[in-house]
Image (cartoon, rainbow, N blue to C red; front, side, top):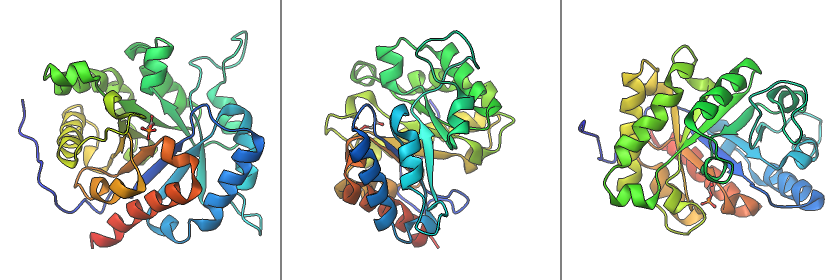
Length: 275
Ligand code: PGA
């Protein structure tokens, strides 16, 4: 096993912090509009130092896009993303949504390989690699989610497992600009459970992911690696302060504007602090 850096230290200034808000299957029209408008109104200058993207359910993408427009009709700088995309383009694929459709309604990002897609919809590594390629083909930036189960962690197989998930997508990433995608490390045992990884567990996994990407010929120093799994405003600063944690993918806490904005501000502050 390679030695990994678990020391806290400054994050590289080549990586702009990034925060995603994964709304999952929550909300209705009014809630989606209000949440997006509240985030836009209160996010302030966090956007000068951090990149922020929200992933609402498909039916509300257009509502959210419109709510993210500022009063003078400019986009507020918060990006829009889809929670999944089809590996197909158009055609007889009932229930699916294509990357072209997401791009058409204003998405710049898309989640790929979330553990809930892997476990509830049987998405395997080959399908996830195909979705990563399709994202790029449609001009979308994939936020690629990986992470181990509690059983894998307890069996001390986390790194081998993460390496396998990365190997599956590596060839799709090698000729891509590092800004055009992100990796979200989301240990399954920490998602929605309130059990956050310790800063040391997170840093160790992130450093390992960065080393593994570098070994696959990816410009790993510039790739944003986000932590996801019960991030809250109360633990964001500590997690984002780790040298290889470049922001977060936020589920539950992204459904409350004040919490989500506080987390975005924590990410922005790590950028400011690293001068
Ligand atoms: P959580 O979800 O923040 O509610 O744990 C994270 C995610 O699944 O992206």
